[in-house]
Image 1 (tube, rainbow, N blue to C red):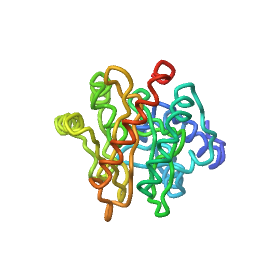
Image 2: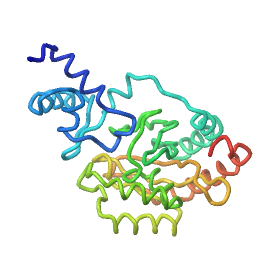
Image 3: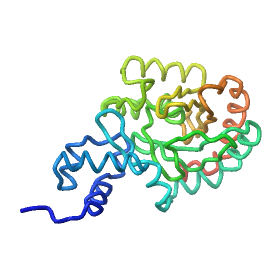
Length: 253
């Protein structure tokens, strides 16, 4: 039986085929199966969706792109609400003292959820959107939290790595060494690992028992960004944020 759906209907079928657990990407064959399309048709439609920012491609996998997050409502759960309400003033202070794009995020599963983001005057294209998700292993905020949550880090390793850019860390040993360095210095880096041209530095926000509840990052254009100059202010503000969050620990954890 022939497929009588229009091209627009088929494109929406592809977009609906992504789930909340797919931020690390889905292969063409799986998307075609979910949408009930041939691989040839799915490949052609995905190319158009990529060109328009609705989908992003990394090697053999696809994920929802920035256009979708711009058009969809932001879901708010209790943790996002508490973290955002208590820590956004500290994120604003970080922005005021750096004048760079800054992020506030927390871990959910193997992904980071962006609670808030403040833009600098010089924006760099990035996949981060308020309420959006990204793989934890290739973001500064993700690595800042995974370094102190080895059970979660092991889960990330078991799930595997996709190479979003030529700089994405996909070797297990290299990734473990990266997390060890984060624990040693208290700072995580993203050197164009999720988006070409974008670099960032991040630090965790701890609750009780040295457990990271959230993280903040400072980012900028890779060609001119000097992350080390932001280490003192980032550490100072995330430490103050952790102290402010302690009375709300149960709601935020």
